[in-house]
Amino acid sequence: MPTILRKTTLCLLLVTMLSSAQAQTLRLGADFTTLFDNKEYATTTFNSSWTLFSARLTPKIGMQWAESNELMFAVDLVQDFGNKTKILSDVNIQLYYGYSSPQLRLLAGIFPREEMRGLDSPLFFDRDFLYYHNRINGVLARYESKDSKSFAEFAFDYTGIRDMNTREAFMIISAGEYNLRGVRFGYDLMVGHYAKDDNPETKEGVVDNILAVPHIGYDVKAGGFDINLQLSYIQSLQRDRYYENIWLHPWGGEFFCAVSRWGVTLSNRLYMHDNLFPLYSRYGKDIYYGTPFYRTTKGIYDAITASYNNTFFNKTLDLSAGITMEYDGTGWGTRQWLQVKVNLDYGILLGRKK
Image 1 (spheres, rainbow, N blue to C red):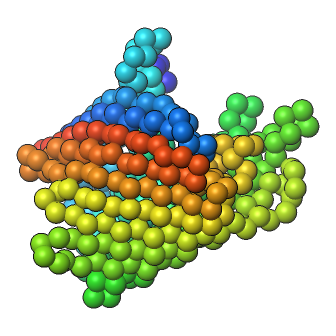
Image 2 (cartoon, helix red, strand yellow; image 1 turned 180 degrees about the horizontal axis):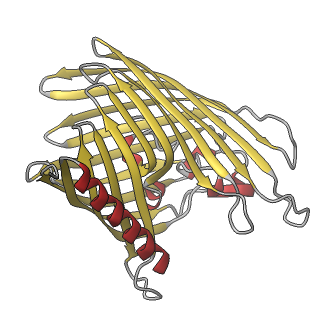
């Protein structure tokens, strides 16, 4: 905690210095998330049962100037329910500079992962990963069309420094989409790098993990319902330089369809073909951040979901709940979740110093 307090003091001093330089907007706010995520996978083979029940509060402060620039500081305070060993289960900071224009978004520092528009498939990030790793450490750049329907973005996320306790890990991630009369042509890309020590006793070296997912989708309104269809091709390239030192190239196809109305959505996600996580038994979630069901060796993973999502109180409160039935070729499992998110942001105009 002393380290966090020192960093907080430095950031507050920086905000004070900026506010005295010219007309600024002081931004105060807080984000709150509580998530209940219960997985019951006893009859499946490729995933494990467990329950995530936790809350996170993120107070934030920052400056906005020249309309397009912002400098923000926040602290993520996480408490897992039932954890009585310490006051807070985890504490992390967010510290970033951002630039916004009608079509351009630039970020540098430690900023919320939800700033990204792409990579929303559970192949890349499972819900529990997104909850505990809600930050990108690095940079992000995104360009959007005037109607915001088409975009291209790039991010570099550096998650581990090579030292005695943490091994080097980073992701180069990119996504893009072009919308033509409701037809979406797009891609998602993740280039992962993970370096363990070279100690022969641990027998872990350097892993390269690449996932490329071109896709085509179609969005339409019919009879008051929103219908979303997407067909994806998934190509992977993976190599463990310590063991086989050869490139593995599992691939597969995925079809997603969803029908929504009044905030209620019925959807189905069907994946077929190879085990996309062939090194999972060796490295697990150190290199694979998506749902472990994609490591199925039975050639199929299917997820049927009924969910509800809506916003309230001028979009400051977001409520999401649902149930998913999942099949991995060996059995069916269920996942139930309830998530409540609050986003508050308040600006105070500060005058120019004379």
